[in-house]
Length: 233
Image (cartoon, rainbow, N blue to C red; front, side, top):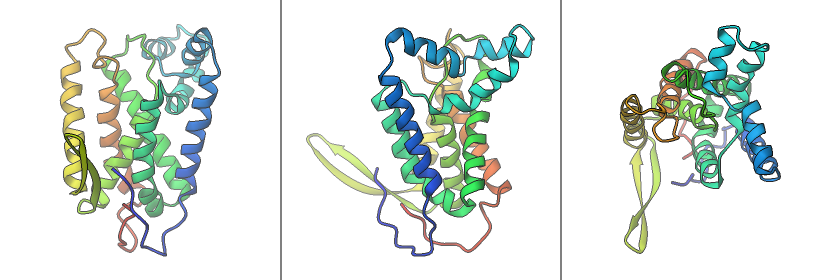
């Protein structure tokens, strides 16, 4: 999946999207500088740990406001190169279009709000988990939810492997992103029967929740207003 050249001269420069990508990369580089003990402590402090959030609500932790911060800080932590690479690719492809429609400030509020609500969705379905929830996936799922609502007929250029060769096809966003959401929703339901409740380490409920909240928050912030222009793809 790749973005194409922007043929719309009226589009704004997606400085927030680029800024979010830069911050995620900077935090990941910092993570690489830490020892295993250091990274464990870093995640324990700044990742969203459902059981700690639950304890803060119950008054068992001394700093409940601090635990709320992890709903935001966890969005900038990643577990490896494939994790951050996949997330930032999707943010690069879809984020600029939503930022163009909402504007810089509203897009930042939308992005962080979707990420926080996605984290809360994961917590609701697994409040006793001690497994840290990290990554920008929930926030980016919100961006994807807004994208399918605003640009359902936009075509996503997608790489398709054919044995040892690759080809590209243009898949309508409503099918590309719709299939992704159905897949995440099914995995979310399946994870209810697992002991960890997170589908083998993947926070599927955060993905599903982020997508749904993107559908809700986007229109509330003015996503559907303004002149219709061809999206960057």
